[in-house]
Image (tube, rainbow, N blue to C red):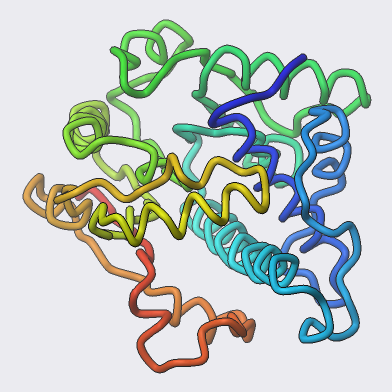
Length: 287
């Protein structure tokens, strides 16, 4: 099945998880990530093995290794948030090639709703079936676009708005225009019962300048990954502000916080301010 567009980036994230799994000190072990990358037939330039000395590899490969390090931090943090929340209804929006429905040990009675485009949902389901992987949870894939009316689709799949939900927005907001981000956050507020939780990766607020566009296009040409499509949107909504205004308790988690929590520095960030410039995360609980 061909994988293109945003799906290519989903493959790249899976490749990063595969590489993280190969480290001697992995934050995440994903037994299926490499198989998903192979099945996609996408030429993602992540190396398959973690090098002994990252400073000895070419600059582009070094960037990919450091990107994989960030994905390892992000994935482990969200895994830990889901474990700590322990909610029986989980919704992963823009789920890509996420394997949490197979990787994690879920409480009995948990339903995990994975929402993404039909091509991505079909590819993930078909590939995992082909390798004989069985979900560890009641997995409910929902083929829908988050920029279209998706709420009715997830409800038709059995989602219960009155019950507490743990929402996951991982690597999603940077793809969306500011108005689509705002609409998505409003839908989450409307669909959340008391006790709901959210873990949201912020969209870095970069300005779409010629210099930024040239830098991302150069990186895309070198890697084949469409990062030129991921230019941060101008004036995106702040998820923390949106949820706080709706009565949720919110906290901001920086990338630097995660580097310290998991003792995993992002070696490319050699300046004091580099980690602070990244988007970071918002965690929130509805009272």
